Amino acid sequence: MAHLQNRPGPGQGRRRASHSMESVLTEAVALLDEAGAPALTFRALAQRLGGGVASIYWYVANKEELLDRATDHVIGTVLAEIEALPGSDDPIDDLRAMAVTLFDAILDRPWLGAYFMRNTDVQGNSLRLYEKLGRQTLRLDLNALQRFHAVSAVVGVVVGSAVDMGQEPPEEVLDGSVNRDEYLGRYAQTWRELDPEAYPFVHEIVDEFDGHDDVDQFRSALDLTLAGLRLQSGA
Amino acid sequence: MAHLQNRPGPGQGRRRASHSMESVLTEAVALLDEAGAPALTFRALAQRLGGGVASIYWYVANKEELLDRATDHVIGTVLAEIEALPGSDDPIDDLRAMAVTLFDAILDRPWLGAYFMRNTDVQGNSLRLYEKLGRQTLRLDLNALQRFHAVSAVVGVVVGSAVDMGQEPPEEVLDGSVNRDEYLGRYAQTWRELDPEAYPFVHEIVDEFDGHDDVDQFRSALDLTLAGLRLQSGA
DNA sequence: CGGTACGATAGAACAACGTTCGATACAGTG
DNA sequence: CACTGTATCGAACGTTGTTCTATCGTACCG
View 1: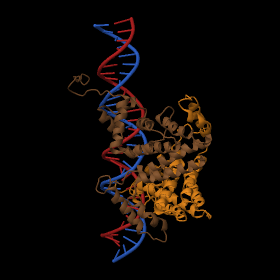
View 2: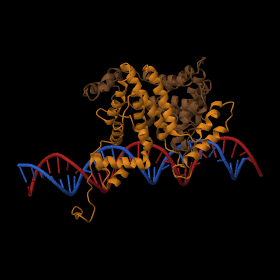
View 3: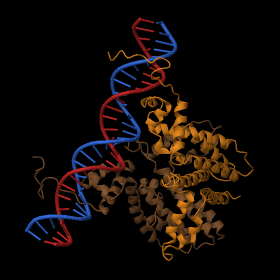
View 4: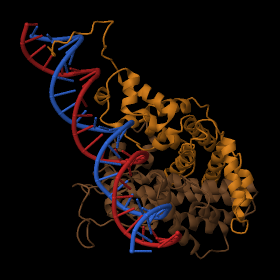
């Protein structure tokens, strides 16, 4: 009889898996870290948790919520790093240190760039981070609107840079057959072959582009914004 | 006999559709414009073209290429707008005008934000746009590295702001049951209910956030970066 | 102790998607 | 007429997010 299945004893047969919100989020983040956003599927996650696919739906309503919770999870650790920052007497320097910390976290986890700031959800760690950044502007001589725009600008610079480098490398560098510098070099070479009259700027910066560092690029963009902010605050 | 199907005459039966690269791209963009990125599927596009699904694969290798070509297609029109700009004696003002033009185009087509700058592909319109922006920095007293970073920063601000507003509104505003201001108002309300001691900054700017304009937010971020750039160029 | 409600798990199925395959039509050329 | 290359299309495949329904196991209660 089909319904008289032999029950699996506690050491043989299939055990029922027992999860928790924590374990679901941890394994989800692990999948994202190991192979990026496309690797996080409900089936892969279920297998990793040693359970069934539908079980995950008891913890999250859908994939969007899974992504939201996973990002919020790691933003929590970033927030802890930021709160552990020493702090100085210059609010703009502190703002810079926080932005750099955030950017470094995104460099470690490129998938974060795409999903960060997707939800400034109430009570989330993103909001706490937003507050942390904004509190520095309270030390500056600005009005409320300027403060609002200043924090948006800083976050914008981080996200803008992160999105740029968050895109998946085109597989020949992923499988290691070509490293990043080599890839950049090929790109630079095609640029060098363009007509110098039609593309004077591209020729001007191609040597800088070749083998450039993403962190330098971000730091420069951030410094420009912060310089403008310092000017605006009259300090 | 099954193989002796009656041929469809020119006026009855199923006609074979005849496409072109242009029509494929145009209809793809139309789908994106009407209902965003998720609306662009091979089946929807095929139906719109009055043909079969597999036919599209004669023009593009896969969806990534379809997106790339569609994006490049509209960037072409943006490029035309930018080239039609009057121009002034201040390179930074010109840079601002170009960035604003680009941003406006993304406001019209929110899906553009996510795919723009995904390929600075050789010979693409993105590269031409990049060149156009960079040429303004040639008029500034900067070195090559500074010029490279300056253009990256400006593009970063545009992308960063665009990503922020490129995310789909959460369906209650999409179906028109709640408009954007109402939605922002609700959000602001939950922020107002937070502990003022724990969230002093959020309380400071909540009135500015409520009913804020995305364009103002972008312009402010852009102005900060350009102010920093002007400072750096010593003008 | 037996029953029952509920928290939690899981297999199977569904629809939609990107993609591939094989067959077929059409136009031009010999 | 046959041949060839361009262009088209229906059907199928594998994978994805999601839902349905059935089940397990434990805590509580009579």
